[in-house]
Length: 300
Image (tube, rainbow, N blue to C red; front, side, top):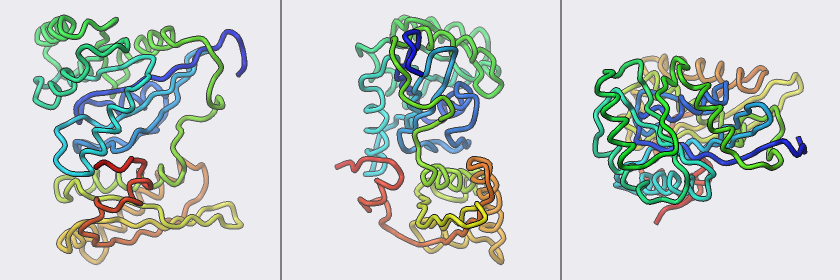
């Protein structure tokens, strides 16, 4: 859309794990582009959602939650989060207003103090928050961070999202759009397919499956009838976890595969044949090639 009236800019969405960043990005885009689960640290890579408001295209970087990194995968995720903030036209800090500021949220706030990029503060989950505590929190963070604007929203219900979107659109610089009008994300179909399967692992297994599991799309075959045959590998760290993923008689893996297949088919807009294989790989998080597959840079 090479029109002199158009605007386009980069927005980095930051926050502690489980603040609701992915849900907010999906709400701003208007469709699901980032996976969501109640499990902390679900988002791993920098995933861009592309939102449109009038003549403005906004490139929303849904960053991993920022936390104290303990191992290589953690370091790569935190590095991805802060790199997502570099050169952004706006930083959006998402705070879970229904919970008290914990250590993880304080780490993000401390990292944002003194940064040069303009900041928008979003107090999320206001539908669950105590109203008096919400006002106290808003005043405290305004004093510490001096944001250009504060929005109180519920990304899950949509309350306040339209006003936030309009503000961000107006703040973007003039310029041509970077992506076609119908493109919603910069992630490849292979990466989105793997993420949708990983989402089902988290949604269906909850606390049973440790956070250190990965999904890799190994093969992608385009069939003559227009469908896609996708082969994915679920990587886990220990033999004891394999039974959890597979379930009795393979029932759990079948349920995960069915839900993931439906989600991938909806994303692609066509039929999908999904084949899942579970592999025990004790050191998968030390596999440099796998970081590229899941969209992260290797962290020393």
